[in-house]
Length: 85
Image (cartoon, rainbow, N blue to C red; front, side, top):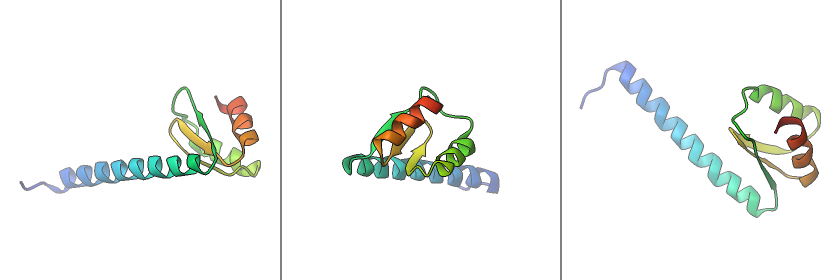
């Protein structure tokens, strides 16, 4: 089947997003096995850049995407939950 450029771009973008999502969950599970603490937000945040800036300003080591966020230190996960959940 031959796709036009727009169709191919859409297929490529969807494939990349799926790949990124799978990679995220694999790494998140590895972090959990290493003792990190998980926080699940009730809904995906609209302010992802604000969350990243907030974590950086508080020197918090995190890994997050959508509703699922992992923290190296449990106290940081609690602090995050109080601010963003």
